Length: 164
Image (cartoon, rainbow, N blue to C red):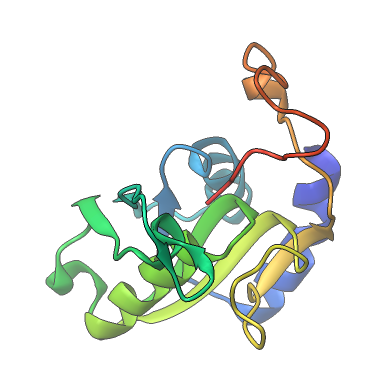
């Protein structure tokens, strides 16, 4: 994790400063905390995003991939307006969560930038969109040290678990 932070810090410092950091729960809690501490960002906010599951097929993708997000927790517009906001998550898999948060920050009048530890361009649903900052590119299923108890339970080699 330290190496990923070391890769990200020069990128973030050259693009900053950032007024606020939004941690996407749950995956972004630890990466966001590490980055906030390393960059001395004191205004740390959270976004909790939920994508409901669906049954029917839509546009060749499972309906769950086409569903709209529900924001269970999100900073108010007045906290984001005209602010440089760094959005942090652990991984960009499909990209849905990070892009949903980015669009909501933009709609609030903020200037967002997405940051993840790992970027998986092979799973991304967005052909011409990627995180502004990432520590590594991968096609692997990542189990972070804080997830070790969950491990690979229920994940078959021929059918990776969906990560948002």
